[in-house]
Structures are given as structure tokens and as C-alpha cells.
Length: 305
Figure 1 (cartoon, rainbow, N blue to C red):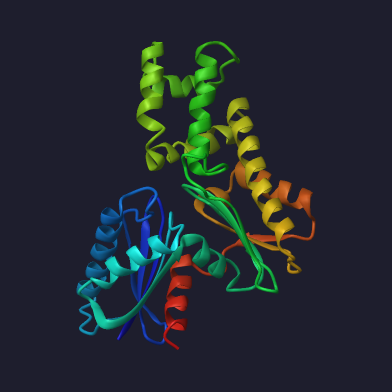
Figure 2 (cartoon, rainbow, N blue to C red):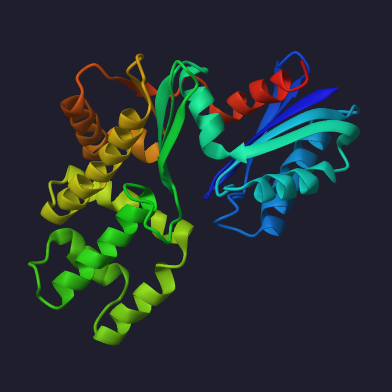
């Protein structure tokens, strides 16, 4: 008998198979399963592929008896029910397997401080802050939709890059080495080219989010526009933390930051930590205590105890 934990984001999905006592057998990274990035069908297809790969690779003959999936984009009971029903159809699950799902922010929060009252800030393809205080009160800020902006996220940094590119194109502001690089990267020589870039990239969350890496690279070089983007993005993230902190009564001032953008050693991470401390010096800031996928495994175990 096996346990399965799933951490599904907008760029990738990590699936872990463990023994019933929680000892990890193996894990795999597959395609995205955030239901606001890909369809339900593609999400489940990626999850099923991952489970099948792990079960066959490790020659596991038993059945999975519990699954907990944290997927980006889940926002209603209807979403949860639909995801649960689709996962239960997997042939590697026992007929009476317990399957539950939730927004990925919940497994992120659990893994951030292993269930301690705290605030978790996810800074990846998307962004969201979520807190639980000592009385069990919860509050969430951000993470509404990439169409709303996903402020402070990799997508947001990519989008801001395009917006600054547009401002330098028509001379509203002075260009920088970063925007000059983007001009060549996107092969822009006319207004039509610029419009085409916006039409192609803005709807593609994952693809545009990849350009956040360029922002941090150019910020390290001291580029003024890249640094401006970082200043704006980190302001948005701190606003999320403030909103959560002010709407719960959290005694344990602890923030776990999850996601490559928030933890990569760059001016972005430095500025984020500085601004959180500026807001409240009591906050202890660190990366997640355990991987969110392992948090999902622990939640899968808890639901059958």
C-alpha cells in the first residue's frame, strides 16, 4: 500500500510516492497541473503520467490508498470535487482510496513551517501569501489569477519587462541595456512587431514567466530598469504579507518563502527580505522547512489515520 503527494504548479508538477509510513520511495517532475494554467484534462494527464512512471519504474505491485494534491488554481468546492473525481479514476489507486485536493497554497503553508502558525509567501510562476494564526484563523492575499497580474511573481516581472520595453520604444522613458537586449530578443523593429509580442506573450503565463530570470540577471548588473522592476515587484509581495498579517492575529512572526524567484540569491531576494524586515523587524524569514510535495505526502497520511 502506498501514499501519493502532489505539488502542482503552473510550470511543473512534483509527484511523490511513499510507503504507508511516509518513507519516500521515489519522485518525479512532470508538466504543469495548475488548473488556471492548463485545462483539467491536461492537468490530470500530467498527474497520471507521473504516477504511472513512478509505479512502473519502481515495480510497485500494490495500490495507492491515499492521495493529497495541492494544485494551483483550485478556488472552489466544485474545482476540488472535479479534481478528486478525475484522480480517483487512476488505475493505480485502490477502489476505496482517499483522495483530497486543495489549492497549492495550503500544502505550501504546511511545508513552509511544518504546520506552525505562520505566513507563507509563494513566489514562483504566480504569487500568493497565506497565513494561519494560533487560533486557526486564516487569510489569503493575492493569487487571484494571472489575468489580475499575479503581482511580484515571475509572470509579473515578465509582464513589467514588456511594459517598460513599450515605454522605451516610443521614448516615454530612456532605454537601458536590458530593454535594448529585449528589443533584439523579440526582434522588434516596428510598432506592429511590438504589438505582436504583447498579443503572443501576455496570455501565455508560463512562457512569459521565464523572462523573470533575465530581470534578475540584469539587476545583478545594475541595470536601472531591471532594478525598478524588482523594486515594484517586491513592493507588491510585501503588500500581500501586510494584508495577511493585519487580518489574522499571528504571535509567531515567521514567514516562509517558497519558489525559485523568492529564494534565488539575487537583488530580488535581498530587497524582499529588507522590505519585510522594514515592515516588522520581528519577522523570521526562511525557505520552506520541507518540500511542498513532501508536505502533501504528510497530509495524505494524516487523512487516513
